[in-house]
Structures are given as C-alpha cells and as structure tokens.
Amino acid sequence: MRIDMAEVIVTSPDRNFVTLKITTADGVTGLGDATLNGRELAVVAYLREHVVPLLIGADASRIEDTWQFLYRSAYWRRGPVTMAAIAAVDMALWDIKAKAAGMPLYQLLGGASREGLLAYGHASGKELPELFDSVRSHLEQGYRAIRIQTGVPGLKAIYGIASQAADTGGGEARYDHEPARRGARPVQEDWDTRAYLRHLPGVFDAVRNEFGPEIPLLHDGHHRMTPIQAARLGKSLEPYDLFWLEDCTPAENQEALRLVRQHTTTPLAIGEVFNTVWDFKDLIRDQLIDYVRGAVTHMGGISPLKKTIDFAAMYQIRSGFHGPTDISPVGMAAQMHLGLAIHNFGIQEYMPHGAKTDQVFRQSFSWRGGLLHPGDEPGLGVELDVDEAGAYPYEQAHLPYNRLADGTVHDW
Ligand code: GCO
Ligand code: MG
Image (cartoon, rainbow, N blue to C red):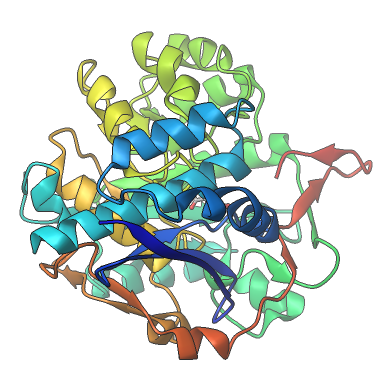
C-alpha cells in the first residue's frame, strides 16, 4: 500500500474543481476533493508544494496517522486552505482503503443506518409566482425537503436567487452552477436587513398556504444579521415550522447564537465555513445549534467530520452537510457514505452538478424518491476522466460580495 504518485488535477467543466489523485504501488487509485470556491489555486499550491512530496513512499493504509502528521507537523494549524488540502488526502486514502477491501466506503464506516439520505433542494424566485414554480419543479424532481430563498423588494440582486444570475449575464438560469462568477473582479450585490426582515415572514406564510404544513422548509440567512435581528427573524418564522434557519449570524461570533437561542425555537444550522471540530466544540457542548453544516472538503476530511458528528450525537445534534455545487462529486460522494453510516444523520443539501461536470466525474450515486444513496461500487464510487478534465482549464472566478445603500461592505 505504498504511495507511488499523487497528482493535483484542476478542471473547470461548469465551475472550478481541485482533485487529488493518489496512486499506490499496486495500482489502486483514490480521489479527494480540495475545492475551495474562489481561492482554488491557494490549495493547489499547498498540495503541490507542501503535501505531495511528503506523501510519496508513505503507507496509504495509515489514514489516521497521515492526517495527524499533516495537521500537527505543519505547526500552523487550521484555516480553509490547510484543511481543504488535508481533506483531499484523507478522502483519497479512505477511497483506496475501501477499494482494496472491495467495499463501498459506507461499509467500512459501520454499514448503512438507513435506506437513503433525505436531501433538500434550492427553490428560489424574485417574486412569489416564480418561487412557487420553482417549489413545484423541485417537488416534481422528487425533493421531499426544500430551501426557500426569495428576492426582497428594493434590492436588485441578492444571494441564492436563480433568475437574477441569468439577468447578470451568466446565460445560465441556475445560479448554483456558478455562484462564483468568472472574471477578474467579484460582482457586487446589494443588501438591506430591515427590508429583508419585513419581507421574509410573509413569503413563508404564502408558501405554507400554497404547499401545506407537511413539507420540510429551510432558509439560509447567509451570515447577514446581527444577533438581535436573527433572534427576531427566528421568532417571526416560528409559525411556519422551519426545518432550519441557516447561518443567521456571521460564523466568527459564536456567542451570538446564545442570544438567538434565548428568543426562538426555530432550529439553527451553522458551519459551512468551519474548518475543524474546534469551531463546533462550544456550539455543540452548549447546545446552541441543531445541525452541523460542515463539509468533508472544508473540515479536513471524512475522519475529523465523523468525530465531530459523533460528538454532536451526544447532544442529539444532527448532520446537515454542506452540498452546493462547489463541493465536487468526490466530496459529495464522501458525504453520502458518511451520512449513510452515522446514526445522527439529519439532512443532506443536494444541488445537482452540471452535465459537463458529470462527464468529467463518473459517479455511481442514485437519487430516488427524494433520497440519495452513494451506490455500491468499491470505494467512494467516483472516477475522474483525466482527458475530459483536461478539456476544461482553470478560469478565475470570484464569489459576489455585498454593499449597503450607503456603500458600506456587508457580509455576503
Ligand atoms: C449553501 C451555501 C452556498 C455558499 C457557497 C459559497 O448553503 O449551499 O451557503 O450557497 O454560498 O458554497 O461558495
Ligand atoms: Mg449556506
């Protein structure tokens, strides 16, 4: 199980992806996702310059030891770049171990705890009729849980609305393939929290009236509120029985969630930008959240996310892994295997990748009856077509950012 080769593959089919491919002396290959949306090449350099040389000749079967070595020997710990690089190594080694065992990875993680993973999709619309159409189309696609994002009167372009991406010249009606837009400068969006707080409860009222009480509904606040604003929003959404309110305040100030919690029973989800169990430790121990939003790709891999989720289980906190298209098919597969095996699974975010991405990454997951399943191929169940990948060279892309009416930069 000696590592013979480790290659970093950058490809941009519908968007940029960074993949680590490890090959052992006996020819077993493993893939790991190292995509850090908008800052991809920093991880490429970290892997190529600092990690790959340490992997050659190492024993591929020593997953935990390799993780601890890469984490501790760097001395400068944590951070999105470091942890995305380590995540890719961890995923690739799990892929190799499961392939060598001839099993789908979820079997090595303890076997299936359920038939499949409840997944939510992203419905959006600037106005209600368009939002309702989007909800209907998601229901037709089989989704049994739906995230609701909507335009706010007076604001031209805000996070999470499909139609505005087309308006801004993307030519692609789905913002999710490319929230990071290609070009040298980020696109500017606008924001007004008071207008948003006035508007959103009415939107959920209308959605519940139209689609009934059953369907689990979610909403992403995308880090924009102060603690007291978030508390007020959570309270005003209580009649609409949300599955969760996500990232209601910026992730840096974890104390903020204590104040939000004191005022509302709307369940809270946070952590898509977190890197380690340390970011979640106090939130879990003090029971300030209901769902762990970490991604294998940004939390340092399958090994540390499994530990985090096992810790969360002690407090009845469940998983809600991050699954936008900037998590590559490799990262998504890793999350599906983990989600199938853990006991305290909650929900999986699922935004299908574009057709070109599906040509580059050959996947074996299934999507049936509103449930995802990683499939039963040995390993992660994803293969990378290197020739196809080579047809799509890297293109610089930036996530948008926000300014208030007076020009102040605000959280996006
Ligand atoms: C989500 C996220 C994404 C992020 C994106 C940034 O809940 O899916 O908020 O939409 O904006 O991952 O790269
Ligand atoms: Mg989010």
